[in-house]
Length: 521
Length: 67
Image 1 (cartoon, one colour):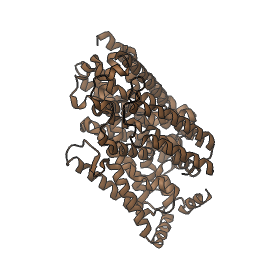
Image 2 (cartoon, rainbow over the protein chains, first blue to last red):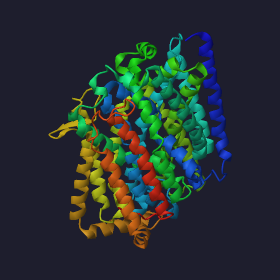
Image 3 (cartoon, each protein chain N blue to C red):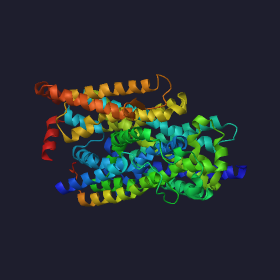
Protein backbone atom coordinates (compact mmCIF):
# COMPACT_ATOMS: atom_id res chain seq x y z
CA UNK A 1 0.00 0.00 0.00
CA UNK A 2 1.46 3.39 -1.00
CA UNK A 3 1.67 6.40 1.32
CA UNK A 4 -1.33 8.25 -0.16
CA UNK A 5 -3.61 5.24 0.20
CA UNK A 6 -2.36 4.65 3.72
CA UNK A 7 -3.13 8.26 4.67
CA UNK A 8 -6.57 8.04 3.08
CA UNK A 9 -7.38 4.79 4.91
CA UNK A 10 -6.17 5.94 8.33
CA UNK A 11 -7.85 9.38 7.99
CA UNK A 12 -11.23 7.79 7.34
CA UNK A 13 -10.60 5.47 10.31
CA UNK A 14 -9.75 8.34 12.67
CA UNK A 15 -12.60 10.63 11.55
CA UNK A 16 -15.18 7.86 11.94
CA UNK A 17 -13.75 6.99 15.34
CA UNK A 18 -14.31 10.62 16.37
CA UNK A 19 -17.96 10.32 15.23
CA UNK A 20 -18.28 7.17 17.35
CA UNK A 21 -16.94 9.00 20.41
CA UNK A 22 -19.34 11.91 19.94
CA UNK A 23 -22.27 9.49 19.62
CA UNK A 24 -21.14 7.71 22.77
CA UNK A 25 -21.10 10.87 24.87
CA UNK A 26 -24.28 12.20 23.25
CA UNK A 27 -25.95 8.98 24.45
CA UNK A 28 -26.34 10.53 27.93
CA UNK A 29 -29.00 12.87 26.49
CA UNK A 30 -30.75 10.17 24.48
CA UNK A 31 -34.22 9.20 25.84
CA UNK A 32 -33.18 11.09 28.91
CA UNK A 33 -33.57 9.63 32.36
CA UNK A 34 -31.91 9.85 35.75
CA UNK A 35 -28.44 8.41 35.28
CA UNK A 36 -27.82 8.43 39.03
CA UNK A 37 -30.00 5.34 39.21
CA UNK A 38 -28.30 2.09 38.36
CA UNK A 39 -31.17 0.61 36.37
CA UNK A 40 -31.53 3.77 34.33
CA UNK A 41 -27.82 3.96 33.52
CA UNK A 42 -27.39 0.23 32.95
CA UNK A 43 -30.64 -0.56 31.13
CA UNK A 44 -31.16 2.71 29.22
CA UNK A 45 -34.24 3.21 31.38
CA UNK A 46 -35.84 0.10 29.75
CA UNK A 47 -36.77 2.36 26.85
CA UNK A 48 -35.34 0.51 23.85
CA UNK A 49 -37.80 -0.26 21.06
CA UNK A 50 -37.70 -3.18 18.62
CA UNK A 51 -35.24 -1.54 16.22
CA UNK A 52 -32.78 -0.39 18.89
CA UNK A 53 -33.10 -3.76 20.63
CA UNK A 54 -32.23 -5.42 17.32
CA UNK A 55 -29.19 -3.17 16.84
CA UNK A 56 -28.00 -3.65 20.42
CA UNK A 57 -28.53 -7.42 20.44
CA UNK A 58 -26.75 -7.61 17.11
CA UNK A 59 -23.85 -5.47 18.24
CA UNK A 60 -23.63 -7.26 21.56
CA UNK A 61 -23.70 -10.79 20.26
CA UNK A 62 -22.05 -10.50 16.82
CA UNK A 63 -18.75 -9.24 18.18
CA UNK A 64 -15.29 -8.73 16.73
CA UNK A 65 -14.88 -12.40 17.64
CA UNK A 66 -17.59 -13.41 15.17
CA UNK A 67 -16.24 -11.11 12.48
CA UNK A 68 -12.55 -12.11 12.73
CA UNK A 69 -12.17 -15.39 14.57
CA UNK A 70 -14.77 -17.49 12.75
CA UNK A 71 -13.37 -16.80 9.26
CA UNK A 72 -10.08 -17.70 10.92
CA UNK A 73 -11.33 -21.07 12.08
CA UNK A 74 -12.94 -21.79 8.67
CA UNK A 75 -9.61 -20.89 7.03
CA UNK A 76 -7.74 -23.25 9.35
CA UNK A 77 -10.23 -26.06 10.10
CA UNK A 78 -12.44 -25.88 7.00
CA UNK A 79 -16.16 -26.67 7.14
CA UNK A 80 -15.94 -27.69 10.82
CA UNK A 81 -15.09 -24.07 11.71
CA UNK A 82 -18.49 -23.06 10.34
CA UNK A 83 -20.05 -24.28 13.61
CA UNK A 84 -19.18 -20.80 14.89
CA UNK A 85 -22.00 -19.33 12.82
CA UNK A 86 -24.28 -22.31 12.17
CA UNK A 87 -25.70 -22.02 15.70
CA UNK A 88 -27.00 -18.46 15.31
CA UNK A 89 -30.61 -19.28 14.44
CA UNK A 90 -30.78 -21.73 17.37
CA UNK A 91 -29.40 -19.08 19.76
CA UNK A 92 -32.30 -16.71 19.21
CA UNK A 93 -34.88 -19.49 18.98
CA UNK A 94 -33.73 -20.85 22.33
CA UNK A 95 -33.65 -17.34 23.83
CA UNK A 96 -37.29 -16.92 22.76
CA UNK A 97 -38.26 -19.60 25.30
CA UNK A 98 -37.08 -17.95 28.50
CA UNK A 99 -35.67 -14.45 27.96
CA UNK A 100 -39.08 -12.71 27.51
CA UNK A 101 -40.25 -14.38 30.71
CA UNK A 102 -37.14 -13.27 32.58
CA UNK A 103 -37.58 -9.77 31.08
CA UNK A 104 -41.17 -9.64 32.38
CA UNK A 105 -40.10 -10.70 35.86
CA UNK A 106 -37.26 -8.16 35.76
CA UNK A 107 -39.64 -5.35 34.87
CA UNK A 108 -42.18 -6.28 37.56
CA UNK A 109 -39.65 -6.72 40.30
CA UNK A 110 -36.90 -4.29 39.27
CA UNK A 111 -34.10 -6.71 38.42
CA UNK A 112 -31.03 -5.40 36.67
CA UNK A 113 -29.09 -8.67 36.61
CA UNK A 114 -29.83 -12.39 36.54
CA UNK A 115 -28.41 -12.60 40.06
CA UNK A 116 -31.22 -10.30 41.22
CA UNK A 117 -33.60 -13.03 40.12
CA UNK A 118 -31.61 -15.66 42.00
CA UNK A 119 -31.66 -13.49 45.12
CA UNK A 120 -35.38 -12.88 44.85
CA UNK A 121 -36.17 -16.52 44.24
CA UNK A 122 -33.90 -18.21 46.76
CA UNK A 123 -33.03 -15.50 49.26
CA UNK A 124 -29.88 -15.92 51.33
CA UNK A 125 -26.49 -14.64 50.33
CA UNK A 126 -24.25 -17.45 49.15
CA UNK A 127 -26.01 -18.43 45.91
CA UNK A 128 -26.71 -14.95 44.44
CA UNK A 129 -23.18 -13.75 45.26
CA UNK A 130 -21.73 -16.94 43.76
CA UNK A 131 -23.77 -16.55 40.56
CA UNK A 132 -22.70 -12.89 40.30
CA UNK A 133 -19.01 -13.76 40.74
CA UNK A 134 -19.26 -16.47 38.07
CA UNK A 135 -20.59 -13.85 35.65
CA UNK A 136 -17.89 -11.33 36.50
CA UNK A 137 -15.02 -13.80 36.09
CA UNK A 138 -16.35 -15.47 32.97
CA UNK A 139 -16.58 -12.07 31.26
CA UNK A 140 -12.92 -11.15 31.77
CA UNK A 141 -11.60 -13.45 29.03
CA UNK A 142 -14.53 -12.48 26.80
CA UNK A 143 -13.55 -8.80 26.96
CA UNK A 144 -9.93 -9.82 26.47
CA UNK A 145 -11.02 -11.60 23.32
CA UNK A 146 -12.56 -8.40 21.95
CA UNK A 147 -9.27 -6.63 22.61
CA UNK A 148 -7.34 -9.20 20.60
CA UNK A 149 -9.75 -8.40 17.76
CA UNK A 150 -8.93 -4.71 18.14
CA UNK A 151 -5.22 -5.57 18.08
CA UNK A 152 -5.66 -7.52 14.85
CA UNK A 153 -7.34 -4.52 13.20
CA UNK A 154 -4.59 -2.16 14.30
CA UNK A 155 -1.79 -4.59 13.43
CA UNK A 156 -3.11 -5.11 9.91
CA UNK A 157 -3.69 -1.40 9.36
CA UNK A 158 -0.22 -0.46 10.60
CA UNK A 159 1.56 -3.34 8.86
CA UNK A 160 4.83 -2.15 7.40
CA UNK A 161 5.10 1.02 9.47
CA UNK A 162 8.15 1.04 11.72
CA UNK A 163 6.74 1.41 15.22
CA UNK A 164 3.54 -0.61 14.78
CA UNK A 165 3.81 -2.48 18.11
CA UNK A 166 4.09 0.65 20.27
CA UNK A 167 1.49 2.59 18.24
CA UNK A 168 -0.84 -0.38 18.62
CA UNK A 169 -0.56 -0.49 22.41
CA UNK A 170 -0.89 3.27 22.79
CA UNK A 171 -3.92 3.34 20.47
CA UNK A 172 -5.59 0.60 22.50
CA UNK A 173 -5.05 2.41 25.78
CA UNK A 174 -6.43 5.66 24.29
CA UNK A 175 -9.44 3.84 22.82
CA UNK A 176 -10.16 2.25 26.19
CA UNK A 177 -9.84 5.53 28.11
CA UNK A 178 -12.39 7.11 25.76
CA UNK A 179 -14.64 4.05 25.95
CA UNK A 180 -14.46 4.07 29.76
CA UNK A 181 -15.29 7.79 29.70
CA UNK A 182 -18.47 7.48 27.72
CA UNK A 183 -19.60 4.28 29.36
CA UNK A 184 -19.31 6.15 32.66
CA UNK A 185 -21.37 9.11 31.48
CA UNK A 186 -23.88 7.44 29.14
CA UNK A 187 -24.19 3.81 30.25
CA UNK A 188 -26.23 1.54 27.97
CA UNK A 189 -27.54 4.54 26.01
CA UNK A 190 -24.04 5.38 24.75
CA UNK A 191 -23.39 1.74 23.90
CA UNK A 192 -26.70 1.52 22.02
CA UNK A 193 -25.96 4.52 19.80
CA UNK A 194 -22.47 3.12 19.21
CA UNK A 195 -24.16 -0.18 18.36
CA UNK A 196 -26.24 1.36 15.58
CA UNK A 197 -23.12 2.85 14.00
CA UNK A 198 -21.17 -0.36 14.48
CA UNK A 199 -23.84 -2.57 12.93
CA UNK A 200 -24.26 -0.34 9.86
CA UNK A 201 -20.50 -0.07 9.25
CA UNK A 202 -19.98 -3.81 9.75
CA UNK A 203 -22.71 -4.58 7.21
CA UNK A 204 -21.16 -2.18 4.69
CA UNK A 205 -17.75 -3.75 5.38
CA UNK A 206 -18.90 -7.36 5.09
CA UNK A 207 -21.10 -6.84 2.04
CA UNK A 208 -18.39 -4.98 0.12
CA UNK A 209 -15.66 -7.44 0.97
CA UNK A 210 -17.94 -10.39 0.13
CA UNK A 211 -18.99 -8.96 -3.26
CA UNK A 212 -15.47 -7.89 -4.22
CA UNK A 213 -13.87 -11.19 -3.16
CA UNK A 214 -16.45 -13.39 -4.86
CA UNK A 215 -16.03 -11.49 -8.12
CA UNK A 216 -12.22 -11.50 -7.76
CA UNK A 217 -12.17 -15.31 -7.66
CA UNK A 218 -14.85 -15.66 -10.34
CA UNK A 219 -17.69 -17.09 -8.19
CA UNK A 220 -17.81 -19.94 -5.71
CA UNK A 221 -17.38 -22.81 -8.21
CA UNK A 222 -14.14 -21.30 -9.48
CA UNK A 223 -13.07 -20.09 -6.07
CA UNK A 224 -13.36 -23.53 -4.49
CA UNK A 225 -11.85 -25.50 -7.34
CA UNK A 226 -8.84 -27.54 -6.34
CA UNK A 227 -9.04 -26.60 -2.66
CA UNK A 228 -8.60 -29.30 0.04
CA UNK A 229 -11.70 -31.40 0.76
CA UNK A 230 -11.93 -30.04 4.34
CA UNK A 231 -13.43 -26.88 2.84
CA UNK A 232 -16.31 -28.78 1.15
CA UNK A 233 -17.53 -30.94 4.03
CA UNK A 234 -16.20 -31.75 7.46
CA UNK A 235 -14.78 -35.07 8.52
CA UNK A 236 -17.83 -37.08 9.78
CA UNK A 237 -15.87 -38.05 12.92
CA UNK A 238 -16.21 -34.41 14.01
CA UNK A 239 -20.03 -34.51 14.03
CA UNK A 240 -20.34 -34.88 17.82
CA UNK A 241 -17.82 -32.09 18.42
CA UNK A 242 -19.67 -29.84 15.94
CA UNK A 243 -23.03 -30.56 17.52
CA UNK A 244 -22.04 -30.27 21.20
CA UNK A 245 -19.99 -27.10 20.58
CA UNK A 246 -23.05 -25.50 18.97
CA UNK A 247 -25.31 -26.66 21.78
CA UNK A 248 -22.92 -25.21 24.35
CA UNK A 249 -23.06 -21.79 22.71
CA UNK A 250 -26.85 -21.95 22.24
CA UNK A 251 -27.52 -22.76 25.89
CA UNK A 252 -24.96 -20.33 27.28
CA UNK A 253 -25.73 -17.34 25.02
CA UNK A 254 -28.37 -15.68 27.21
CA UNK A 255 -26.71 -16.70 30.45
CA UNK A 256 -23.92 -14.22 29.62
CA UNK A 257 -24.54 -11.17 31.82
CA UNK A 258 -24.06 -8.65 28.99
CA UNK A 259 -26.70 -10.33 26.85
CA UNK A 260 -29.14 -10.40 29.78
CA UNK A 261 -28.28 -6.73 30.33
CA UNK A 262 -29.02 -5.80 26.72
CA UNK A 263 -32.29 -7.80 26.76
CA UNK A 264 -33.48 -6.08 29.96
CA UNK A 265 -33.15 -2.73 28.15
CA UNK A 266 -36.11 -3.59 25.89
CA UNK A 267 -39.35 -1.65 26.26
CA UNK A 268 -41.76 -4.56 25.92
CA UNK A 269 -41.79 -8.33 25.49
CA UNK A 270 -43.04 -7.98 21.94
CA UNK A 271 -40.25 -5.56 21.03
CA UNK A 272 -37.73 -7.93 22.57
CA UNK A 273 -39.12 -10.83 20.51
CA UNK A 274 -39.11 -8.78 17.32
CA UNK A 275 -35.50 -7.81 18.01
CA UNK A 276 -34.56 -11.48 18.51
CA UNK A 277 -36.32 -12.57 15.31
CA UNK A 278 -34.56 -9.98 13.17
CA UNK A 279 -31.19 -10.60 14.82
CA UNK A 280 -31.10 -13.98 13.05
CA UNK A 281 -30.87 -12.17 9.69
CA UNK A 282 -27.71 -10.50 10.92
CA UNK A 283 -26.04 -13.89 10.65
CA UNK A 284 -26.37 -13.91 6.84
CA UNK A 285 -23.61 -11.39 6.00
CA UNK A 286 -21.60 -12.85 8.87
CA UNK A 287 -21.83 -16.41 7.51
CA UNK A 288 -20.92 -15.23 4.01
CA UNK A 289 -17.98 -13.37 5.56
CA UNK A 290 -16.92 -16.59 7.28
CA UNK A 291 -16.89 -18.36 3.92
CA UNK A 292 -14.22 -15.92 2.81
CA UNK A 293 -11.93 -18.04 5.00
CA UNK A 294 -12.21 -20.49 2.05
CA UNK A 295 -12.01 -18.09 -0.88
CA UNK A 296 -9.06 -16.14 0.53
CA UNK A 297 -6.87 -19.03 -0.63
CA UNK A 298 -7.55 -17.95 -4.22
CA UNK A 299 -6.78 -14.25 -3.80
CA UNK A 300 -3.01 -13.89 -4.39
CA UNK A 301 -2.70 -10.36 -2.92
CA UNK A 302 -4.41 -11.45 0.30
CA UNK A 303 -2.30 -14.63 0.48
CA UNK A 304 0.83 -12.46 0.22
CA UNK A 305 -0.51 -10.16 2.91
CA UNK A 306 -1.17 -13.12 5.23
CA UNK A 307 2.38 -14.36 4.70
CA UNK A 308 3.52 -11.39 6.83
CA UNK A 309 2.11 -13.10 9.91
CA UNK A 310 3.23 -16.36 11.56
CA UNK A 311 1.25 -19.37 10.25
CA UNK A 312 -0.21 -20.16 13.69
CA UNK A 313 -1.81 -16.74 14.17
CA UNK A 314 -2.54 -15.91 10.54
CA UNK A 315 -6.23 -16.82 10.50
CA UNK A 316 -7.47 -13.78 12.37
CA UNK A 317 -6.11 -11.57 9.54
CA UNK A 318 -8.22 -13.23 6.82
CA UNK A 319 -10.87 -10.50 6.74
CA UNK A 320 -8.44 -7.57 7.25
CA UNK A 321 -6.21 -8.95 4.47
CA UNK A 322 -9.13 -8.91 2.01
CA UNK A 323 -10.33 -5.52 3.22
CA UNK A 324 -6.91 -3.92 2.78
CA UNK A 325 -5.91 -5.55 -0.49
CA UNK A 326 -9.27 -5.61 -2.29
CA UNK A 327 -11.19 -2.49 -1.23
CA UNK A 328 -10.46 1.15 -2.11
CA UNK A 329 -8.55 2.84 0.75
CA UNK A 330 -11.46 4.92 2.10
CA UNK A 331 -13.73 1.86 2.20
CA UNK A 332 -10.94 -0.16 3.83
CA UNK A 333 -10.65 2.53 6.53
CA UNK A 334 -14.41 2.50 7.08
CA UNK A 335 -14.49 -1.31 7.25
CA UNK A 336 -11.60 -1.59 9.68
CA UNK A 337 -13.20 1.04 11.92
CA UNK A 338 -16.47 -0.93 11.79
CA UNK A 339 -14.68 -4.06 13.00
CA UNK A 340 -12.77 -2.03 15.59
CA UNK A 341 -15.89 -0.57 17.21
CA UNK A 342 -17.38 -4.04 16.71
CA UNK A 343 -15.01 -5.00 19.52
CA UNK A 344 -15.48 -1.83 21.59
CA UNK A 345 -19.30 -1.83 21.82
CA UNK A 346 -19.64 -5.36 23.23
CA UNK A 347 -16.68 -4.71 25.54
CA UNK A 348 -18.58 -1.68 26.89
CA UNK A 349 -21.78 -3.65 27.54
CA UNK A 350 -19.80 -6.50 29.11
CA UNK A 351 -18.10 -4.05 31.48
CA UNK A 352 -21.48 -2.43 32.32
CA UNK A 353 -22.79 -5.89 33.19
CA UNK A 354 -19.76 -6.58 35.39
CA UNK A 355 -20.24 -3.23 37.12
CA UNK A 356 -23.88 -4.04 37.86
CA UNK A 357 -23.02 -7.45 39.27
CA UNK A 358 -20.27 -6.20 41.56
CA UNK A 359 -22.27 -3.18 42.81
CA UNK A 360 -25.69 -4.79 43.28
CA UNK A 361 -25.02 -8.43 43.91
CA UNK A 362 -21.68 -8.41 45.70
CA UNK A 363 -20.92 -5.08 47.41
CA UNK A 364 -24.51 -4.15 48.25
CA UNK A 365 -25.00 -7.62 49.66
CA UNK A 366 -22.43 -6.87 52.36
CA UNK A 367 -23.14 -3.11 52.67
CA UNK A 368 -26.94 -2.95 52.36
CA UNK A 369 -27.09 0.73 53.36
CA UNK A 370 -25.57 2.08 50.14
CA UNK A 371 -27.82 4.69 48.50
CA UNK A 372 -29.18 4.29 44.98
CA UNK A 373 -26.74 6.89 43.77
CA UNK A 374 -23.86 5.22 45.59
CA UNK A 375 -24.75 1.91 43.96
CA UNK A 376 -24.74 3.51 40.51
CA UNK A 377 -21.41 5.24 41.19
CA UNK A 378 -19.77 1.97 42.23
CA UNK A 379 -21.08 0.26 39.10
CA UNK A 380 -19.79 3.07 36.86
CA UNK A 381 -16.30 3.00 38.35
CA UNK A 382 -16.20 -0.78 38.40
CA UNK A 383 -17.14 -0.94 34.73
CA UNK A 384 -14.21 1.36 33.94
CA UNK A 385 -11.82 -0.69 36.06
CA UNK A 386 -12.87 -4.04 34.55
CA UNK A 387 -12.04 -2.77 31.06
CA UNK A 388 -8.48 -2.17 32.16
CA UNK A 389 -8.29 -5.53 33.93
CA UNK A 390 -9.07 -7.15 30.58
CA UNK A 391 -6.56 -4.91 28.84
CA UNK A 392 -3.91 -5.97 31.35
CA UNK A 393 -4.77 -9.61 30.68
CA UNK A 394 -4.21 -9.08 26.95
CA UNK A 395 -0.90 -7.29 27.46
CA UNK A 396 0.42 -10.08 29.67
CA UNK A 397 -0.96 -13.21 28.00
CA UNK A 398 -0.17 -14.13 24.38
CA UNK A 399 -3.10 -13.47 22.01
CA UNK A 400 -3.19 -17.01 20.63
CA UNK A 401 -4.59 -18.23 23.93
CA UNK A 402 -7.49 -15.79 23.93
CA UNK A 403 -9.90 -17.73 21.68
CA UNK A 404 -9.75 -20.74 23.92
CA UNK A 405 -10.34 -18.52 26.92
CA UNK A 406 -13.74 -17.58 25.47
CA UNK A 407 -14.70 -21.24 25.19
CA UNK A 408 -13.42 -21.80 28.73
CA UNK A 409 -15.53 -18.81 29.86
CA UNK A 410 -18.54 -20.43 28.21
CA UNK A 411 -17.88 -23.69 30.10
CA UNK A 412 -18.15 -21.67 33.32
CA UNK A 413 -21.14 -19.50 32.47
CA UNK A 414 -23.25 -22.38 31.14
CA UNK A 415 -23.26 -23.88 34.66
CA UNK A 416 -25.66 -21.19 35.94
CA UNK A 417 -28.44 -22.78 33.84
CA UNK A 418 -30.15 -24.47 36.83
CA UNK A 419 -30.00 -21.29 38.95
CA UNK A 420 -31.41 -18.99 36.29
CA UNK A 421 -33.20 -20.63 33.38
CA UNK A 422 -34.51 -23.78 35.04
CA UNK A 423 -35.48 -22.02 38.28
CA UNK A 424 -37.57 -19.59 36.27
CA UNK A 425 -39.85 -22.54 35.56
CA UNK A 426 -39.70 -24.71 38.66
CA UNK A 427 -39.41 -24.41 42.44
CA UNK A 428 -38.14 -27.94 42.66
CA UNK A 429 -34.38 -27.23 42.69
CA UNK A 430 -33.02 -26.36 46.12
CA UNK A 431 -30.41 -23.68 46.52
CA UNK A 432 -27.88 -25.87 48.34
CA UNK A 433 -28.20 -28.39 45.52
CA UNK A 434 -27.71 -25.73 42.85
CA UNK A 435 -24.70 -24.27 44.65
CA UNK A 436 -23.04 -27.67 44.99
CA UNK A 437 -23.81 -28.80 41.44
CA UNK A 438 -22.60 -25.54 39.93
CA UNK A 439 -19.39 -25.43 41.97
CA UNK A 440 -18.46 -29.07 41.31
CA UNK A 441 -19.18 -28.84 37.59
CA UNK A 442 -17.09 -25.67 37.18
CA UNK A 443 -14.14 -27.32 38.93
CA UNK A 444 -14.64 -30.53 36.92
CA UNK A 445 -14.91 -28.53 33.69
CA UNK A 446 -11.69 -26.62 34.30
CA UNK A 447 -9.90 -29.81 35.28
CA UNK A 448 -11.09 -31.54 32.09
CA UNK A 449 -9.81 -28.61 30.02
CA UNK A 450 -6.37 -28.99 31.60
CA UNK A 451 -6.47 -32.74 31.13
CA UNK A 452 -7.58 -32.53 27.48
CA UNK A 453 -4.61 -30.23 26.86
CA UNK A 454 -2.22 -32.52 28.76
CA UNK A 455 -1.73 -29.72 31.30
CA UNK A 456 0.00 -27.61 28.65
CA UNK A 457 -1.00 -24.74 26.39
CA UNK A 458 -4.78 -24.60 25.98
CA UNK A 459 -5.61 -25.42 22.38
CA UNK A 460 -8.86 -27.37 22.70
CA UNK A 461 -12.06 -27.45 24.74
CA UNK A 462 -13.11 -30.83 23.36
CA UNK A 463 -12.84 -34.03 25.36
CA UNK A 464 -12.48 -37.47 23.80
CA UNK A 465 -15.44 -39.76 24.63
CA UNK A 466 -16.54 -43.15 23.25
CA UNK A 467 -19.06 -41.21 21.09
CA UNK A 468 -16.39 -38.93 19.61
CA UNK A 469 -14.89 -35.69 20.88
CA UNK A 470 -17.39 -33.49 22.73
CA UNK A 471 -17.48 -29.95 24.06
CA UNK A 472 -16.54 -30.02 27.76
CA UNK A 473 -19.19 -27.39 28.61
CA UNK A 474 -21.98 -29.80 27.66
CA UNK A 475 -20.40 -32.79 29.42
CA UNK A 476 -20.10 -30.93 32.74
CA UNK A 477 -23.54 -29.35 32.31
CA UNK A 478 -24.92 -32.90 32.28
CA UNK A 479 -22.93 -33.60 35.47
CA UNK A 480 -24.31 -30.39 37.00
CA UNK A 481 -27.90 -31.37 36.20
CA UNK A 482 -27.43 -34.83 37.72
CA UNK A 483 -25.87 -33.49 40.95
CA UNK A 484 -28.43 -30.70 41.31
CA UNK A 485 -31.37 -33.05 40.71
CA UNK A 486 -30.13 -35.81 43.02
CA UNK A 487 -29.35 -33.38 45.85
CA UNK A 488 -32.68 -31.57 45.38
CA UNK A 489 -34.39 -34.92 45.78
CA UNK A 490 -32.51 -35.96 48.92
CA UNK A 491 -32.24 -32.65 50.83
CA UNK A 492 -35.14 -32.71 53.30
CA UNK A 493 -37.77 -29.94 53.03
CA UNK A 494 -37.23 -28.89 56.65
CA UNK A 495 -33.65 -27.79 56.18
CA UNK A 496 -34.70 -25.75 53.19
CA UNK A 497 -37.39 -23.90 55.13
CA UNK A 498 -34.97 -22.97 57.88
CA UNK A 499 -32.58 -21.61 55.25
CA UNK A 500 -35.32 -19.61 53.56
CA UNK A 501 -36.29 -18.03 56.88
CA UNK A 502 -32.67 -17.14 57.49
CA UNK A 503 -32.74 -15.55 54.06
CA UNK A 504 -35.68 -13.29 54.93
CA UNK A 505 -33.85 -11.68 57.81
CA UNK A 506 -30.96 -10.54 55.62
CA UNK A 507 -32.73 -10.03 52.30
CA UNK A 508 -34.49 -6.73 51.56
CA UNK A 509 -37.02 -8.51 49.38
CA UNK A 510 -39.11 -11.34 50.82
CA UNK A 511 -38.39 -14.57 48.94
CA UNK A 512 -41.95 -15.76 49.53
CA UNK A 513 -43.09 -12.95 47.25
CA UNK A 514 -41.12 -14.62 44.52
CA UNK A 515 -43.13 -17.77 45.08
CA UNK A 516 -46.37 -15.79 44.99
CA UNK A 517 -45.40 -14.18 41.74
CA UNK A 518 -44.64 -17.64 40.44
CA UNK A 519 -48.07 -18.89 41.45
CA UNK A 520 -49.84 -15.89 39.97
CA UNK A 521 -48.47 -16.82 36.62
CA UNK B 1 -51.92 -19.67 25.66
CA UNK B 2 -51.74 -23.39 24.95
CA UNK B 3 -51.71 -22.72 21.21
CA UNK B 4 -48.92 -20.18 21.50
CA UNK B 5 -46.80 -22.57 23.54
CA UNK B 6 -47.43 -25.29 20.97
CA UNK B 7 -46.42 -22.87 18.22
CA UNK B 8 -43.16 -21.99 19.98
CA UNK B 9 -42.47 -25.68 20.63
CA UNK B 10 -43.00 -26.39 16.93
CA UNK B 11 -40.62 -23.57 15.92
CA UNK B 12 -37.97 -24.79 18.37
CA UNK B 13 -38.26 -28.36 17.06
CA UNK B 14 -38.03 -27.30 13.40
CA UNK B 15 -35.01 -25.02 13.95
CA UNK B 16 -33.11 -27.52 16.11
CA UNK B 17 -33.88 -30.37 13.69
CA UNK B 18 -32.52 -28.20 10.88
CA UNK B 19 -29.22 -27.41 12.57
CA UNK B 20 -28.22 -29.30 15.68
CA UNK B 21 -26.93 -32.54 14.16
CA UNK B 22 -24.84 -31.94 11.02
CA UNK B 23 -26.86 -34.31 8.79
CA UNK B 24 -26.45 -31.60 6.13
CA UNK B 25 -22.72 -32.30 5.85
CA UNK B 26 -22.58 -32.99 2.08
CA UNK B 27 -21.75 -31.12 -1.13
CA UNK B 28 -24.56 -31.85 -3.63
CA UNK B 29 -26.81 -30.17 -4.58
CA UNK B 30 -24.70 -27.03 -4.83
CA UNK B 31 -26.23 -23.57 -5.22
CA UNK B 32 -24.20 -21.08 -7.29
CA UNK B 33 -21.22 -23.34 -6.60
CA UNK B 34 -21.78 -23.29 -2.84
CA UNK B 35 -21.85 -26.75 -1.19
CA UNK B 36 -25.18 -27.78 0.41
CA UNK B 37 -23.57 -27.69 3.89
CA UNK B 38 -23.18 -23.92 3.69
CA UNK B 39 -26.26 -22.83 1.76
CA UNK B 40 -28.56 -24.91 3.94
CA UNK B 41 -27.34 -22.96 7.00
CA UNK B 42 -27.96 -19.67 5.16
CA UNK B 43 -31.40 -20.66 3.85
CA UNK B 44 -32.54 -21.71 7.32
CA UNK B 45 -31.66 -18.27 8.75
CA UNK B 46 -34.35 -16.79 6.52
CA UNK B 47 -36.88 -19.50 7.37
CA UNK B 48 -36.09 -19.21 11.11
CA UNK B 49 -36.63 -15.44 11.01
CA UNK B 50 -40.03 -15.90 9.35
CA UNK B 51 -41.04 -18.56 11.89
CA UNK B 52 -39.92 -16.40 14.82
CA UNK B 53 -41.79 -13.37 13.47
CA UNK B 54 -44.94 -15.46 13.06
CA UNK B 55 -44.60 -16.58 16.68
CA UNK B 56 -43.91 -13.00 17.80
CA UNK B 57 -47.12 -11.83 16.15
CA UNK B 58 -49.10 -14.70 17.68
CA UNK B 59 -47.65 -14.16 21.16
CA UNK B 60 -48.37 -10.41 21.26
CA UNK B 61 -47.48 -9.01 24.68
CA UNK B 62 -47.85 -12.45 26.26
CA UNK B 63 -44.74 -13.30 28.27
CA UNK B 64 -45.67 -16.62 29.77
CA UNK B 65 -45.03 -18.88 26.81
CA UNK B 66 -43.69 -22.21 27.99
CA UNK B 67 -42.42 -25.23 26.17
